[in-house]
Image (tube, rainbow, N blue to C red; front, side, top):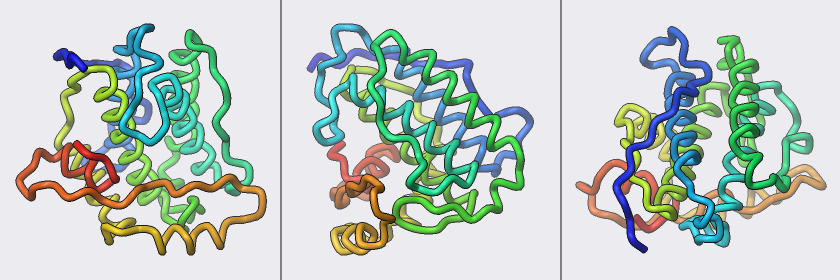
Amino acid sequence: MDHTTTTTTSTSRPLAGELAADDPRLAFAKAVALAGGVLDGVQPNQLEQPTPCGAMDVRAMRIHLVTVLRRVAAAGRGLPLAEWPVEQELADDAIASAWDDAAHDVQAVWTDAAVLEHQIAVPWAILSGVETLAIYTNEVIVHAWDLATATGQRPEWDDDVLAVCEAAIHDQLPDASRGAMWEAAAAEMPPGVPWSPPFADAVEVAADAPAIDRLVAWNGRRP
């Protein structure tokens, strides 16, 4: 694949406002802004390109990113897992508006700082609101990398955001091998809730690899 150099920007930063530097909502807002820029950079002739994320092509990954934001809003509302949004077909020309709508919905829910203290059920654990937002910051960034890699984009990764992601994923997935963890999680899922392992086993990379490479490798990607 011919990778071109692209700097992505976005003015959409839900939650950013006047947040403290260590507020997890700021890192999430920056992740959403970066991912939005990558989404904007996808060309129509790239929609069937494969991504590093399993069987997802670019078209499916764009839809999945919208679904991730919708799930973050559902998590903040305290909805049970059985009521979380599932992947739905979206027309190619509907992605931008769906993304913006989902981002604003996240903002509406998570603007209340009290949500950060809530206990929230995610597919593999019960987490605080802070932990939930941090692990979904990781998911948004890793999928932005998937999409950027598939479409030849080179986003400018924010070191502070990557640090939040790395801390979150190592906290939730301290072991490189995750098979037993996912078997146990699947056994605890409520009936009727769709389930597939959310993270593959970690991939080994050099200790001095770039931060984004270390992050995606711990998320099961080969940088």
